[in-house]
Structures are given as C-alpha cells and as structure tokens.
Length: 506
Image 1 (cartoon, rainbow, N blue to C red):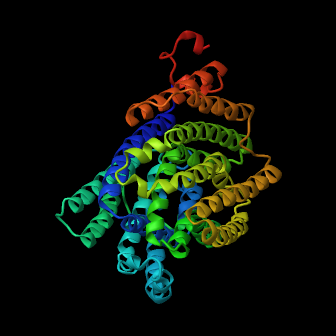
Image 2 (cartoon, rainbow, N blue to C red; image 1 turned 90 degrees about the vertical axis):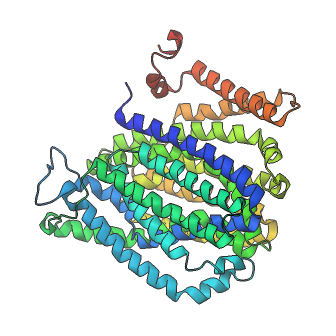
Image 3 (spheres, one colour; image 1 turned 90 degrees about the horizontal axis):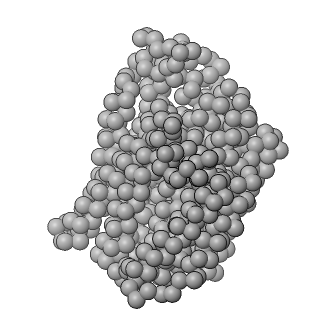
C-alpha cells in the first residue's frame, strides 16, 4: 500500500498535468495567436518580478516555515494546548513576519521607481506602464505562498496543486479569451491576470482553514529566547538567500528583456521555450512538497542516514520523470512549433529549449540539496552559495546574451546550474556524507539514450498530429519497457502492485 504522503504526491502530479494541458492550450494556441511576443513577454515578466519582491517580503519564510514547523506542530510529543492555539500559534507568527516584510517591500519598491523604470525603458517600455500593478500582484503572491507552504507542512499537496495548476490557469484562460474576442482591452486584461492570483490566494486560505483551524491565538511564552534568536539569525540569512536564489533562477529572463535588442519580444520567444521546459519540472513540484517536511523532520532528529535515503529517492525519480518528458518534447520539437499559430515567430527558441532542458535536468537531480542544507547546521553556507550563484549568473548572462541572444541566456543558465549545484553537493558530500547518486541512477542515462534512439527509427508521418503521437508513444513505451526489464523502480512497482503481470512484481 502506498503511504498517504505518496498518494498526495501522485494526486498532486496528476492534477498538475491537467493544469499542463490547460496551460498548453492557453500558451500555444491562445497566446501565440492573439498576443504579440512583446505582450507575452510582459505577462511572463510581471509574475517573475512579483516573485522576486515576494521573496524579499517573505523574509526567508520560504525556507524557515519548513525548518521551524516541526517545533510548533501539534503531535503526541507536543500536544495541542488551548492557550497556545492550533499548532502552538504558528499561523500568527508567520503572518506577523509576512506583514512586516510586505510593508518593507512596498516601501522599497516605491522608492526605487526611477532607477527600475530607467533600467527597462529602452528595450521594454511596456513594463513601465504597469510599474505599480506589480505591488498587488506581489501581495497576492506572498499571501498565497504562506497559505500554500503551511498546507504542505500538513502533507496535503493535491488541492494546493489544483489551485496553482488548474484554477489559476482556467482563470487566466478566461481573461485571455475575453481579450482575444474583443470584450476587454489590453490593460484590463493585465489587471484581470493579476486578479487571478488574488482569487487563488483566497482559495488557498479557505482550503487551509478546512484542514486546520485558522486562529491567531498564540502564547508568547511558548517561543523560547533560544528559538527566537535562532529564528532571527535564520531569517536574516535566508531573506538574502531566498531572494538571491530566486533572482539567479530568473536572471536569464530579466537580462533578456534588458540586454537583448528585442526587449520584451525576445522575452516572449524565451517564454515559449521556458514554458516547455517548465513541463519537465512538474513531478518535482509535487515530490518536493512532500519530501521537504520529511527531510526537516529527519534533520530535527539528527537522522543523517534518513536524510540521505530521502535525497537519493527524490533525486532518482525526479531525474527519471524529467528525462522522459525532456526526450518526448525534444523528439517532437518541430511538430510543436508546426502546430502553433504563428509558430514561425517562436521557432528560434528550439535550441533555447534544449539547453534550458539540460539545465533543468541538473536542477531536478540536485535541487533537494537546498532543503538538506537549509535544515542542517550548515545552513549559513547558503549565504556564500547564493553570492556565488548570483555572481556567476550575472556575469554569464552579461557576457553571453549580447553575443548569442536568447541562446546565450539558456547557456548561461546551464553553466550556472552545473557549477552552483556542484558546489552545493560538494559541501554535502564532504561535511555530511550525503549525496543523491546511486547505481540505478547511473543506469538511467543509457536507458534514456536507448529510448531516444528508438525515435530515430521512425519515418515521418504525413500528419503532424499523428507524427507527434507516434513519437511520444514509442519513446514512452520503450523507456517503460526498459525500466520494467531492469527492475530499478521497486517503489513505483509497489504502488502499482496488483496492476502489473506477476513476473514484474517479484
């Protein structure tokens, strides 16, 4: 029997793929047909800027919620007390910290208007028209993130994923269609796009209230002075770290809009390639949502062996899923641009996808290292790590984008991921003897190449849709058959027990 956590992870992945279907329809047929590359670039850049600002406003809580929730969680060893409130007042503390961060962030953003608008005015003037629209979008993102992370600590994934991947996309699809059919103008569409985040924030809060009481009751004496000091140090460190890591991950898009002569139009082309790459990380979103609280709990108990086991398991299945999706997209990349309305405007993003995809595979394999370090006594390492990543990302994009354009941004991301995650893993290997590598992971690479090679044996079909279906089916079936033959996925086999032939369940 699969554990409740595993079932939540699977349901979360299924829900996410439903969202991908909606996102595929929206991005490749609605946006590509009715929006210009510049307008597409704006709808991508606005939430990315809001993510950066919310990372600042969260004051490191993206990491500290996972680290400190085990100390507040109601449990047999730490039972509920009426005077402390649900989970010993955890909601009160995160909302207070978030409120302080939000006020600070808004003030800094308003004061920085002139230098920020000057930065994008040359190549991306459209962004300046919606400068203040980013403030409500950021506040919605912050509130939603707090509710979502709290829900993850309770090991509930499916509904939050449904809100993020399905509800948000449906709301945005409706806004785009209103614009496409002329019912609203472009500025109204942008504000409707922003409002969709507010609706999802409220939905996330309502769901959290259904699985745990939402109360601001708290007992200040529960939080010891030692815990307060530890939290202040952790928050000071991770306020910079979380912003730095997020900025490094988005540096490519920002620098394309700033440095490339195409401005937001180039950002629109880059967005299309980036969207295809984002499909690769879908399993990671659900798996990490479950794995992070478990790693935090094991770290609290100082169980390094368990931390390492979880790390290996997560890395293997994320690489497996990522390789399968990457190959299936790559063998169909020409078909995808062929079925897109105005696909010729975006097909220059083909090799952008390839290098971004490789960068994403590196991230999938090693991304759990962030959680392992953040919950260990070496968490202070992240400040050095973040500075290194930011510098590397900035210099590589600064050099490569003027030379190679959007391709340079993709290569910069690949280079940054290889070096930065390599440094993170080096720390874990030396200090904690923890790493994600296993014999079965090494077997995945040749198996993936065999599945990729099977595509080369197929002739081109007369219909683009038939060709896309056949190539996807062949690659998927060949890789699945090889995995079953090699028997290197026992955990997955266990979940499917009773649904496979007996010879594969031994």
